[in-house]
Amino acid sequence: MFDIVFWILALVTVGAALAVVILRDVFRAALSLVLLFLAIAVIYITLYADFLAVVQVLIYVGAISILIIVSIMLTREVWHGSPTGKLRIPAIVVSLLLLGTMVFTVINTNWETSGEPPLQPTTAAIGTSLFGEGGFILPVEITAVLLLAAVLGAIVLIREK
Amino acid sequence: MTLLEQFQLWLGGIWPDWAAYIVPGIVGILVVLGFVVISVIVFIWYERRLLGRFQIRLGPNRLGPEGIFQPLATALKILLKEDIVPAMGDKIIHWLAPVIVFVPVLMVFAVVPFGEKAILADLNVGIVYVVAISSVSAVGIYMAGWASNNKYALIAALRTVAQMVSYELPVVLAILGVVLMAGSMSMTQIVTAQTLPFIIFQPLGFVIFFLGTVAEMNRSPFDLLEADSEIVAGYHIEYSGMKFAMFYLGEYGHALAYACIISTLFLGGWQGPFLPPIIWLMIKVVAVFSVIVWMRATLPRLRVDQLMAFAWKGLLPMAIINLFIIAAEVLLLPEITPWIIVAMNFVFAGVLIVLWSKLFTLGGGRVEV
Image 1 (tube, each protein chain N blue to C red):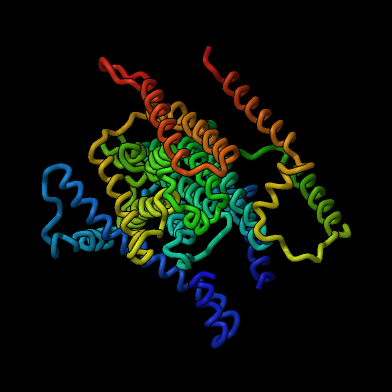
Image 2 (image 1 turned 90 degrees about the vertical axis):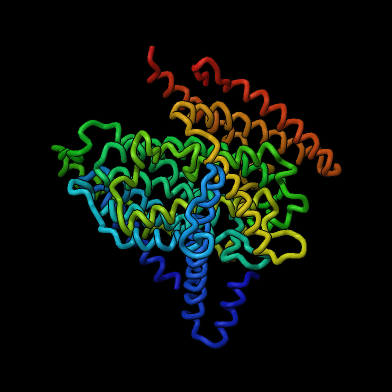
């Protein structure tokens, strides 16, 4: 059962990712990105990572993709679609090389798998490992401050004098 | 074990595995779809009659007893209309947009508990799921605005994005207060944690959540994205026929979904004496919906800058302070009698609302925001 679901999802994910790159219409490319994010969320669900899946939808579909679409609106000549660059061929070569390297690495790595059943529910476990004893509370706090600084920096940069 | 899981188990005894796996899902979807469509039809009639009352007129009362069949006639009329697609618009996206607006609304009902076991999926991340799924419909509205190739539709789409992104923050922070007090994100456990409804514990959180969700479902006074008088119905200006009906259904379905969520989070959900759980939930949902209609009939529409200021300067700081107060109470006073916390929170709510209302004073034809 999960095998069929996984292969359908894999097809959708790869197809959507290709569509993001290939489509000439920038808005449709952005929508394919939304589809990609959703498919990845469903993959998380099949891996019993429910909290991660929901957060993926919340952050990526609900916020990031909308930000991307708004920023597309702010670009000039959005009606003409993405222009053809001179570096198409080199870009394809480089990305194929990168893809080959990644596929080679993934296939040749001896992945450690755990025999234990997946943890359910995951929310409390994520909470304790992030904020509990020996957790990552300092990095999390620093990230929050960093993001705040970035937001303030962006506002300062675009503010009218 | 929920009713659906029991059904699945029972089915597993007589049907092959794959059928027992798929059929309950389809049955659940059909039940939700039927519930949403029927409730929306009743709600449309109820809202029109209630608006009539508020505006000292009758409202539709000709078709059937008290006009109850009027929404059916309206639906039939809408479905028989010609489907118009703008010539220069993006046809595929124009076709997809109503679906993407409507489907998330249906998906929200998967985690609404209608009774102790009557819930489609008791996710342990229930309430985060609701927030996540309902944020998807903003993408649909944006698609509608873009694909219509119409400047009013696009303005509406941009307004939607600004509004939904801004009001999501106070809504989520108000939910966090509930989650802290209930100690769980699962909808059933949030309901069972409410020996006293959370509206009594967290009056400020309730006000913030209520206003935030009314803004999220784009109803008056926050209905800037379809402000008829300025951008002529906004994002669905180029829609007709079945697709328009989908938007309409989605809009009322959204109101119904959020009324269910408000009842579940703050009004004790299906809990209540004597009557069966689903009746209690529906009573609360209708009460919440009546208040929403009351707001629509009473308050004038906000301006764009007022809307943004209200979210970022009004609701967001109050939501952060509310979360801080709730967190402090949960952490420091776990054993205290609930009524002391209730009294404290009412005092905090009163003081904060009075303080913040000073920031938004109207006067002399000039609006200070």
